[in-house]
Picture 1 (cartoon, one colour):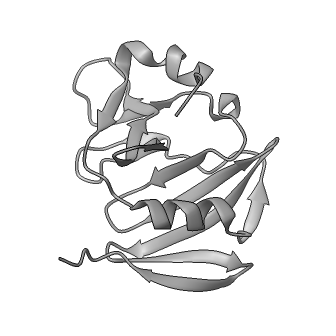
Picture 2 (cartoon, rainbow, N blue to C red):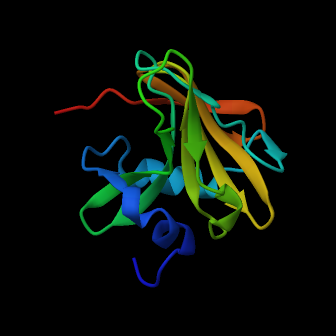
Length: 149
């Protein structure tokens, strides 16, 4: 990937990259080209942190080795409390065609694509093994996410 993304420079001091690839290059290309279910001004990011569900917002970055996730959210740093807020970087600073993963828990997450000044929901999952991609509006294509060896 060439060039730089200003939001990554902004969160660079706390940047956490996950080396485990959650999706492959083919799935990433499907997410970039899907027409989507709906468009919104700002995606519904989780606001509160809890250690069981581990909600987060992550940017999917393509690389020569695969697709990597860069976390754009983190629990606020005010000690260990029962109700911590989840701090998220300003997602409107991401470039067009960026794909983000918004995870509320292990079974409920969605993928959004930045389209100019809006966000388009391109996929969602309510099951850790199956992702529904919205290639033709609300009629999803079911993609099995169980790795094959």
